[in-house]
Length: 354
Image (cartoon, rainbow, N blue to C red; front, side):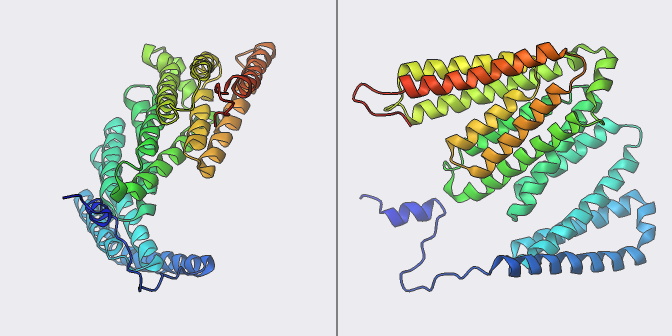
């Protein structure tokens, strides 16, 4: 017997509203903002009251960890109840306070093991990103996990730049498979947003004056020397996976010359990234945004591209002539790729490839 469409949607976890049911009315944005502010304000007063009466807890690592886990469990219960914006942000604030207490306890327990502390915090954030029922909490946990991975790789392997490539590769895999699990589509999107924001935070940390790259290069470690190129290699792998997905989706309308031009452009971008680190990651994010028609991701990719270009332009270890030649090659490549897609991206019947 053929399975009906309603049965297939129910099995995938998608519920359909009845025809006679009234549509849900979304509150205006300013009402939701006021509810969120009220939740944070109530959480701050509550946590301040608890903190004033339980200052002695900070003196004991076990007590701080226990109270932190209790707050995280309470936040999970609040977020699972789906009580609106007020309850969601109240639970989010309680969860963040609990995470700070757990981090405080771990810092005291691992006082001489900084790398172990960051790996433990990474594990905590990964668990929270996977199990917390709030989409906002999942995104923030994914962002915190990205930063924890960056610090863990920096402290243990002196390979902090690899974190950006890893986060980008996971984000590309999530966004390309968001429709494979319809029941968990919004969770995948929340994790994808968090990972891309984490990538942006990592790039800002690397490009700022407090970057760890200078310390890594002074160590003289082989892995520290190769780390920036390994991060760009992971980003190039993500670009190749993205191009493969696009070609499979548009196989009926994609000319072979367009595929060869795209792969050639990916190779050139990889070669340019060997000189201007971070450039390939920005290109991957922009391509991902266009592939899934997501304006926010496109804007994030443009911001990453501006950061990478500005960082390379003000890099004092390379002459201005070399930097100008690299940026000129990048601009010529992009213009040539656009011209080639417009000229050769036509099929024999005159149809223009999208």
